[in-house]
Image 1 (cartoon, helix red, strand yellow):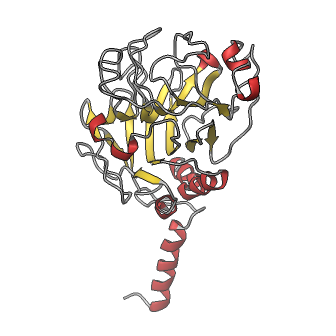
Image 2 (image 1 turned 60 degrees about the horizontal axis):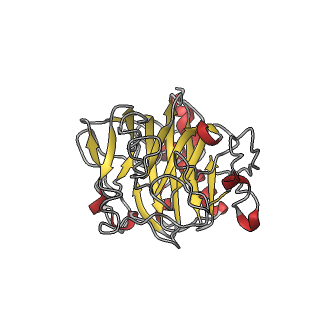
Image 3 (image 1 turned 135 degrees about the vertical axis):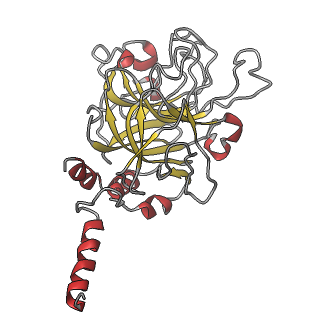
Length: 332
């Protein structure tokens, strides 16, 4: 029979393992989901506690936003920041919520703001990868039929974002257009971090859009990045002269003051016949396929907000994930 003093010691030991900043066993949540749930503007928050074959539901109060598996059951890992588990993408599967069911996730319009926060362990960034968003690109170069809105993406070398975090905002849905209406071959509107996205380690990735600037964060930190037109492949006048007051748009933050594309089934019936973009996690429709740039790695938490969070709020979310504990457990 355990003596009272021994029982108290055991309970204190368990409490210590679950404290932020300490190592936790697999299945034990390393972080604190209440920080995310209490952050104003929260639309949806997935902790990926469900097993293979189940929809993944948001635990935020505004709705469950059930994400359905595409291409079969997706594995669950016994480690994660908020539920003790995470979803484990293999690059051949993803999660999807149909456009008609996106509700408050359908953040759009000239005055729209959005933020996204993710706790992930990414592997293999040799090509472009997707965290999440409402981002349907169409069939490829010079295709203007896309219905892009917002997305948190990785590795976009075309305009200076190789292996970096590159959150996108689109006002056109299709390709980016200069002030005179002339078109780029792709959507060119994204911020790009100084640092590369960490691979094979838990980290937090986030972005905010306040109606003017897109700002990217890695592990809770924003690092200002100035535009280098030649190095960043952004020497077009759109980048160098069509920013605020006729100046450049920057890199991080990146100036994009034209709002978020809003799909209209009547207005866009002919130009965008495939309809509005679904909300997807782990993949996006690009170059005619969802799987061409699907992600490999674990997702332990994903949150979407309908406002631009502050630097302090992004750091608080990062700290709530306790990625140091996750990485320590990963190495055991």
